[in-house]
Image 1 (cartoon, rainbow, N blue to C red):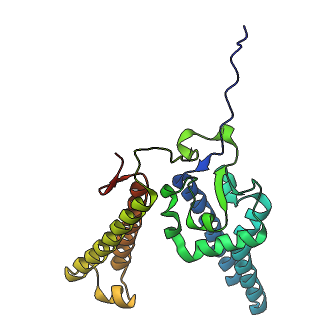
Image 2 (cartoon, helix red, strand yellow; image 1 turned 180 degrees about the vertical axis):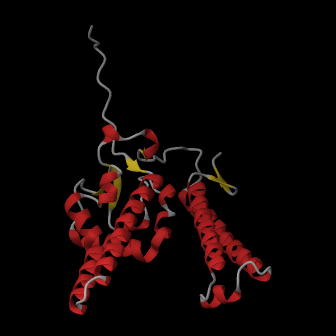
Image 3 (cartoon, rainbow, N blue to C red; image 1 turned 30 degrees about the horizontal axis):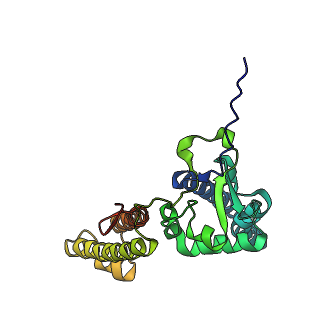
Length: 241
């Protein structure tokens, strides 16, 4: 029995969520660590200093060129491929080597802070994606689950405050978040939980490192939440009607 109903339209691009991209980054980091420890193991068992230097230079070159070359030629790193992701330029193809190199440079400078704007963009783009006119999409939609991606966000809701108002209110909340972060650090130092030497001179014990990392991660999460909520009209002062 056949149906005369027209086929459903093909969905648009599927843009990767942060959780999926984080998994790809983690896999690439594990590969980098395996390469480093493997190189150290080889170098420690080689009697030749010259060969050890050549090995060191080769490892550094691989680590520096791995992502831009893979994004340029394969549309993503091994981490991207294993998590069913692809880095795509605005024309739908792979990035050029120059843009792929610029992308990793921006990502290296900003670190995790590059990802905090994702929830405020239409296509889940980080800062390094925006600056290089690229997106990270699902490579094979047939293998993807709904929780791994979003479709393009639309801003045609008449109850949503203007972009200018949302941006200004979000900036105010971000400023308050910065004050809160430094206030928490001050309290931790005064209570003796975090040493002043760690905060001011980066001379930290093991426990200081853990506390500093947790505080920084919480601050990063708070920034991401403020930006996402602000752009979706969920902050007091710029809420949806």
